[in-house]
Image 1: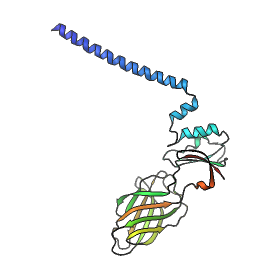
Image 2: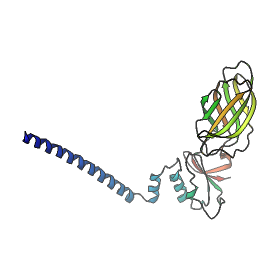
Image 3: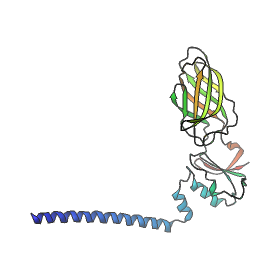
Image 4: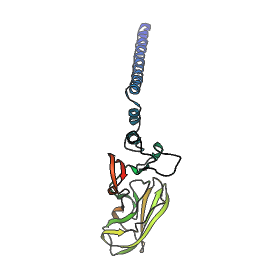
Length: 242
């Protein structure tokens, strides 16, 4: 009995030692891999591998530009990804002015249509968040149930965590079927950074209006026709004024 117990104990001990050795070998392998990366790659390659190339801060793309264009100077960076501004990589803190005739655009989106999710029949919240918002040109939607034409007021807000800032209001008449309402197309300055867009509609009759397919159209944030594209990777661009 004692002999069997000792054999079982030795087997368990041997199994434990094997597991421990496997763990140590894996850790050593990972350490050697990291050392090899340090030896094999230069600083720029390691920098690129450590950060997302074109996404978020896009430090890989920016580092590429910094090395290829050492004369970029104090260049403006427009980052439309939901992440911190990356200008610190080029920033000359001795001046507030941009000293370059070039522009870096991160997260460029050629689509100027803002799509929404339904909160209720009269309220809609954008699917994406926005750092900046350009001029609003028009709002479109469908109404499949409406007995007669209605006078409504459309209110557009910047929204974040339940707090709202009014962007614009528009009174208009709506009809059954497709509706397209032209907005004031004015400059928009005061919105929440990385906030969403909230659209509310109220009618004179106080009835709920069943809207579908609501879209908000803004003018393009960057007009590429005004620039020469020097570098392009996915939706990260280096532009120069024409």
